Image (cartoon, rainbow, N blue to C red; front, side, top):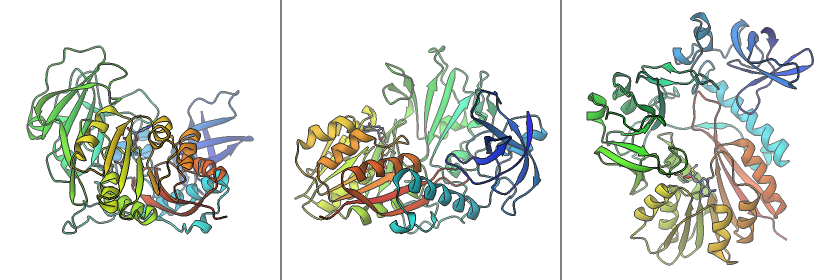
Length: 453
Ligand SMILES: C[S@@+](CC[C@H](N)C(=O)[O-])C[C@H]1O[C@@H](n2cnc3c(N)ncnc32)[C@H](O)[C@@H]1O
């Protein structure tokens, strides 16, 4: 069903809110203020709200621009009777407006879910981040929102072609470029390789300039794949296959079989190089490690000799900076849940006597490891779902004076700020970074501190 709609404000998730006969319709691929024809996904009468996608623009916003990627352009796809691929759903909006829309979403979530005034925490705007590694000598590319992804994930069609999914769809669309991915990823020309027998291909292009690592996830119904070959395979620094042992493939519990080269990449964290194996987590935007570490240090203010914790620590990006700041007289408790990534963290800090790396879920492990002792500061960087009530309670029980909260979701961040409030903490400062240009996502760094008195 196609509807003629006027798009109102932007909502969490990047959709614009519109109304049709009293029902709310969440519309993607639009811009607030536009008049559009939108196609409703399902449109059942029983649903309180519908979801729809713009197929024609009747009155365009002055912020509408030519989409950065034809394959992800909803209007171009409609002309060809196809569906746009996901992953660049803001690509039709000028970068400045993308950032102001993200700022609106952050403001709304913080006000509604945390009863906190964004102005009172010094929030003004969503900040752009240069696409560059840690090295001062590397000049950043122009601010066009492209080539920032140091990590990319692709699906594979039954006949072995590199592909992506349209938004919320099982369909697969073969692709031959990914403009948001770093040049090193596009230069591999993965679309020329026959990946028959595989379900997913993950690529990691490390900031150290080393060639990318390929992580191949076989199809569940095909354990007898033939190793792929060709230029992309030869040019990768390593090729590994995730062999499922338990759980689902790719949840960090599968074992890795190395087909070529090394099963890990080395990533830069300040003066250190950290090992990240297979699908292990690393910040996606090329400029993220540096900008987030600096913002985190500014809020957590770790001092020599202090005892601090890095929660949801990954391979140890923030653990590295904290270890250097507290020095050999201090202590860093580094907690990470995924077995492979935690093993990387253990390896990365083997020589740092002040760092204690432990594997476990923060919800239980933090209370167990601190056993009622206090901490000076905490850094947390949970996945999109946020920390949740139990982890916030465990953090509050450490009596930490300063908590630097790094988050990739404004809703779970604001919800957790509410939980922290119940334990006497207040959000003092917040910055929001545009670490995912041309998508609706954003990255937040907040400072929570104990209320005095
Ligand atoms: C957003 S990443 C942050 C990693 C790290 N701070 C960095 O910047 O590289 C979140 C990490 O939390 C881990 N994780 C997810 N849920 C967890 C939990 N309940 N307890 C501990 N770690 C968890 C994931 O495996 C992932 O490595």
